[in-house]
Length: 298
Image 1 (cartoon, rainbow, N blue to C red):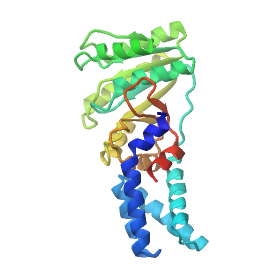
Image 2 (image 1 turned 90 degrees about the vertical axis):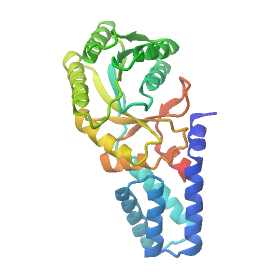
Image 3 (image 1 turned 90 degrees about the horizontal axis):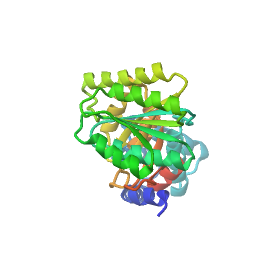
Image 4 (image 1 turned 60 degrees about the vertical axis):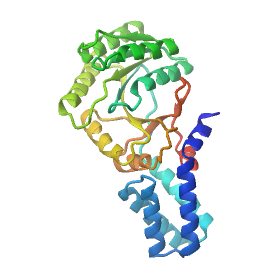
């Protein structure tokens, strides 16, 4: 099964729910205030933020009025176009080399697994990769990352449990410079976005990368569990304030996610989704495709 098929299958419930809601809406309402109010509620029920839902509905209202078309196919097609536009408001960064990619996020979102998948992705792109085990607090985190590094057949830099994460980052980027490695991927400890001291630690690691490897292209990606829903935006806001996020990697899209919050993140915060993961295999990670994502939910 291709990754788009997996995404479509993962978002099947959302697609069916929206299709049923839209069919019901068209059967009982002509285009008017009541119709648009209910359309807004349908979008919010798919985890799209209130702000984004309001913007989307207003654009559809204005376009439908201008075109004087009111049939279901027109409005559904227009809805897909507007949502895709929202998803592409935040430009996806083009990875340039040498690259350092630091993965951040709360506990349990799949950072370590994503390191392995990302390493495999870049190997498929014919790039050399080193991974850095900067999660030095979670028991056996380095061991878990070593398993993924072995699977992907890439080098790993790690220290003893309890070591300073910034020291791991220092050694990893120093080694990458010396070996002319194309990509360094940094695994960091999961941290609650409300813990200021842990967010300061991320800033320290960022400073080490920028100081020791200024010629590298530095990307900070937030790992988000696709089932997070409305809380995702708050997480993204706080991490973005701390380390200026370059993008999002969406994980666990195969866990019956709604997915609508992704549209709000791109539109409200200007943070693009760069990669998406479906499944536990090394190859279950691909560049995010906004058009395919919208096709999967509507």
